[in-house]
Image (cartoon, rainbow, N blue to C red; front, side, top):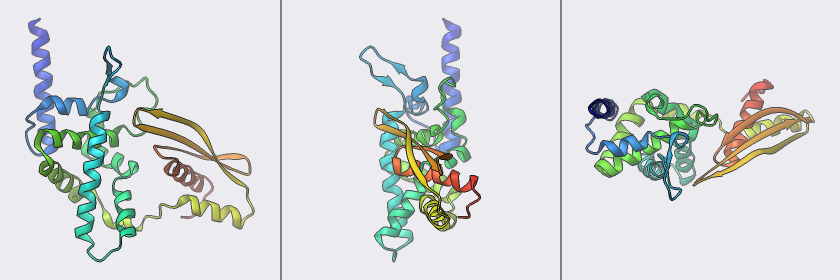
Length: 239
């Protein structure tokens, strides 16, 4: 019993130190950060069917990220229109970008997950990053969450100039190429799941009836873009 308690508090101390290094401040309520790092694949289901995982915190953090990034862009680009601000915010908080940011922060290594679940890798890092922001909000409030997003993420790891020049409309580029060279194309839904508040779509693009690219995302539109990008790479279509 004594050894079990020592092991528990040792892990608690290690997590507190890891969070202090990552966040730049000491957590007050370490349990909310522990929850933020539990992927649903390793979550515990209670008797009433409730799953103990980071999904609810992820929902909260998603809203905070969107609000903070919107304010940041509004102030950074005082003369740009709504369309520009909306598109730029979408690029900053996209699953691809959040996954990359999470890796740079070393967050995926801290997540508790079940490796037997083949789906854990697709958005695990970005999901955990959103959940972490939600945890900061609950533990320290909005100002602390905003400071983390701006200081630790935007200032250190977000290259806005690079994001702004990226052409994300791979689907349009692929369709243009197909129409020009008289190729038939079709986007088909390979699978669709509704997992709590998080839907997931896997889309495959067929060129002349042959599979040429596959993409998975929470929205059908983004999954099509991911499939189109893979097809552009596979077919050597410049973009």
